[in-house]
Image (cartoon, rainbow, N blue to C red):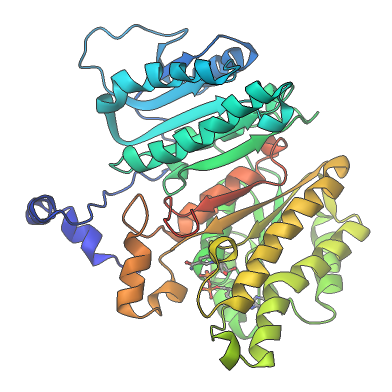
Length: 450
Ligand SMILES: NC(=O)c1ccc[n+]([C@@H]2O[C@H](COP(=O)([O-])OP(=O)(O)OC[C@H]3O[C@@H](n4cnc5c(N)ncnc54)[C@H](O)[C@@H]3O)[C@@H](O)[C@H]2O)c1
């Protein structure tokens, strides 16, 4: 869907008017094109105290061919040096007095960041800290990160990655994702990386090579983008959609060299059909993406039971039934992935969406509770919670509400379906075994539910 204001605001006349009238100033976000470097510019790396995490980070930056300044890297030749990335290892911060080190690292370089820059702060999960002062200081990093997301401007992002002790070797996929333009519309997120024995060896340009992925609701919108991105990253994608959209689904499947499975996920026999299809055609599946979803908005007083039941069944209950069938029959392979699509409506609630918000909050509940069950089976489950994404769903919103939804975030623009898809590809990577039970918003740091 077109966002004419963003196009206008980036024209020479538009830039002048936006500046003089103090209007929202959305920049064209950098987005990933295959083959490009992980980060196209200098990275300043620092640490509160050098430790195990610093070595891991330095190794990952080297492996990603980043031009590194600061810790283990070059010294800036002049004061004019600009940075595309600022990476700070805060894991050595043990109490609140130490937090000044965060200020000391970032303060001198805040005016030296380029457009669409990346700020990444790494810490220890408060729940893994050995005393209250340590946990307090590590928890404080959240407030800093969320404020940084609002200050960085010009399409920049800021994230906090908590790395549990022993999970340093699981950090690479997350650091690469947050450094790169793949995370264009993800900001102010808190991610937890946990230990896992899997040590994936992969080609970072084709991380999903040899994998089979099922994507529900793949004929259009966000689902189509997910199917395209997973196929781009090397997966064979089985796209699923309702039989009425079978022709559109086949077009998408043909374009990406995947296959099409026309099934209504609410049908009583859908879980069995899906399990049998994946077993007989592919011997199993590596990645399940629960993307299919609908809205039927009405205030609760006006909502019919049909509207209520339909939304709950498609968005939540059918996902549970499919997971149960695939798990019971051992269809999901070792180091498998389940990725769910929630919504900021499930976090913040929304007028007229008691059914939708309840289903999407339920998706978060499913992710958090199933993570504990699936961890020992070496399968992960995570969710994305999109904000305002430019699709047919949001194009149908009345103009004034649509413009408010689109601009009320740190990027002053809506995201694209590909932004949700890139986050799903990151979770889906064989190298993301250390991500389990996370919920990441793809919302440009929306003010709603923040
Ligand atoms: N567009 C947004 O801004 C936004 C924001 C937050 C969350 N989401 C979520 O993202 C997902 C995709 O949304 P979208 O905007 O691309 O919507 P969309 O309506 O364009 O696509 C949804 C797809 O799901 C399919 N589907 C619906 N019911 C199905 C069923 N019973 N069986 C199989 N397939 C079924 C539809 O046919 C359609 O192809 C949804 O879960 C939605 O709730 C979207």
